[in-house]
Length: 105
Image (cartoon, rainbow, N blue to C red):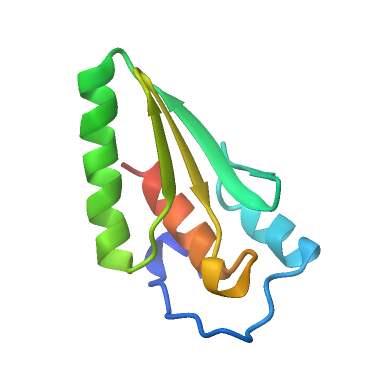
């Protein structure tokens, strides 16, 4: 099933994080993203600060809909997004679902 058609599911402590192989397979469905220091990461570049903030606001809306929130860093016209599941201290399918949905914004 396509990641964009999935919905994030609440994670509980004690659930194991995805294996490297599982993460690599899901990463194939999220072009432009990479796994960096155990997190799903991508940097977006915009024309100016206003466009960057507009994008961040849309990301925030999507994160709220999914109940899964990324770490966001804004540096003028660049927005860096990192996803990982804090509760399990690793990657879950939710991270890739949100990454795929952010890519569509």
